[in-house]
Length: 157
Image 1 (cartoon, rainbow, N blue to C red):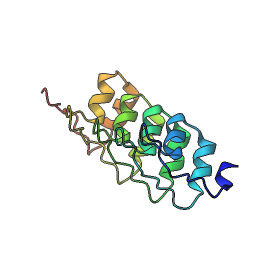
Image 2: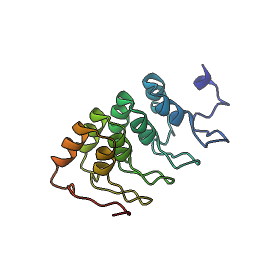
Image 3: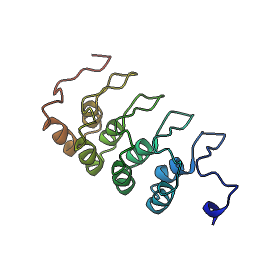
Image 4: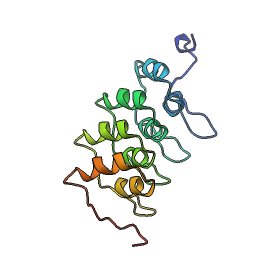
């Protein structure tokens, strides 16, 4: 009902975190709401929040919301490799650190995702994040790639 009202802007961000309804729905894993919002004109699928620069895809990947990630990755206008501005981690890095094998697999299927991209704060790659958390399945997926350095060093060596 709210979306039918002319005075409601579904792309308007809140003032505390700078998150739009799409960002909140993606963070919460609310697939139905995400789908409803993506059907609207003018919705920026890559609009990041002003708090940490996190996009809907990043928040969904970070939270392990596989269905939302799948929906967002089906869009041509989504950037699947956009890091946040606070931690400088990509959706793949968050998913690898969170043991979300299904999400890691979906992201690795994309040619526009760098599986070896390190964050700029600690210099940790998705492989380091997965290994740090003991996520064997994710580590095996990443090591199965030729474009992943099997012996990365973070900024601490």
